[in-house]
Image 1 (cartoon, rainbow, N blue to C red):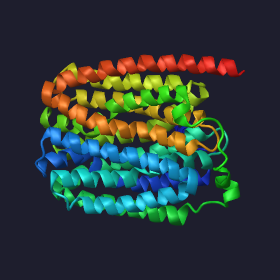
Image 2: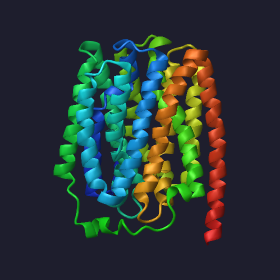
Image 3: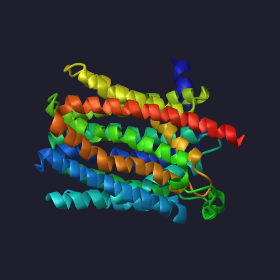
Length: 406
């Protein structure tokens, strides 16, 4: 047991102090993100919106994320990641507090668009900060630690959020989410003061090498793969919570425990898993492939039985895919980005999730509304199989490109 514990801690050694501080601030922010997992249920149960209306509101969520990440990437390359992270957290916190006072459909569409645009402007900046603060050779593990903090927050947030909904009300979540975002911005200001610009290299940001992401054909293929993968993944933030309640009759607090399982599993197992895969020198592209494969399997198993326990199996399969796929896809995007363009490349990478939010929630809600859950999960699983095949093609193209450059 002692050997296992020592081995687990070894995965965290060698990471810089700034990475740990960035992870702490990220955890504070994400622990308060209680609204998002329950947003679709809130819109249906409290506001009385229909499934297609919820789909359109979530599309506005995605559109705001798309604009936010694009603007955030541009700002990261011009004014630096520190100011972008600080502003995004503070303004996002104000936005969450104000969102609870909106009741109309169109008002919610506009409100969620503005909120997400402000909140997601910081996403490319977080990735660039992780890369900047990382010691040589530690980028993947640094990103994994940031993801661990995100998922620890997401595991605690939905659990506490579900209990708050069950025993208090939905609107309390907006206050908690907003206040924790503001606290996170204060944490950045106090704990994560930037080093002198010469050390951080922010003055060299203007020196751009290579080509922009939209002219990089291999990166565009990778971007398409990430959009497609994320189209399915975002169902766990909107359609799946509704499925848990409507098809399996779970209450919000039980749904919170199920979402907690995802975050807790990642917190316990992701860093050792990534450390082991790193030591095995697994290709970042093939790790992305396995992430997509397990995500597809998580949807497929839902059709095998009506037994509620299958929800746990599906959640664990999705979590395994998330643990393998996302840290390495993050690292792959950074690896493909030339000097001075990391903000733009990571903005494109983050925009893949934004586009998925724009299309995925709406598409998923309307698929369920028109064809039911069984056919929706079937479509998702076979769609991801095609995406996995596309990822293998990217792997061979990248290998071919590396051979040419030798």
